[in-house]
Length: 185
Image 1 (cartoon, rainbow, N blue to C red):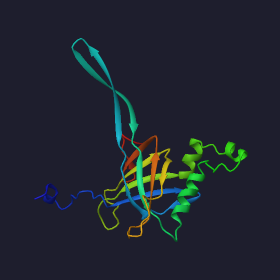
Image 2: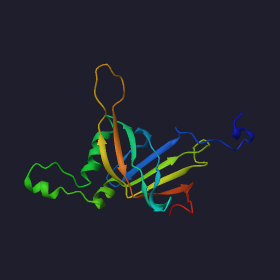
Image 3: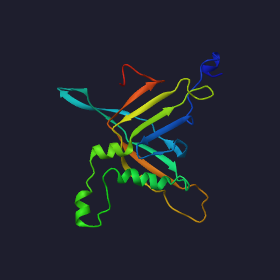
Image 4: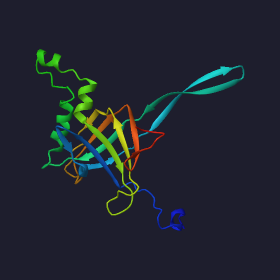
């Protein structure tokens, strides 16, 4: 007997109930093409101090993991083209000449603006999944890596996928539409 079966109102979160929202003024990566994503992770560095026969540890700087997600490439929705457009809007252009090479410098402002808002919603219960929803809103997210699948093969019936890795500064955590006071905005 599971611990949550003692009450009819308690239900565990499920890993397949999630939405990833990536939007900006230049287009949207549809939520339905996202196949999987890892959640944010907080890491605290440490410093050690040795005194005689003892070692003492002190918390250091906080860092956050990279977020990697996979999308299914869709022919009709031109997902590959949308991903490349977001990357190009970050400031990168293929250096076809000296003038274009010098103008092809990426900035954080352009990179963050190109990607737009990134929110991972872990849905809860209910018909629409809105009961018990929690959200991770990534702050200053930008595209670090784009990978167009592993390989093509005649003996494979797998869907074509694109993997993207995002880097961000930190995240805000929301329980429903309310920011968690001890963590977030």
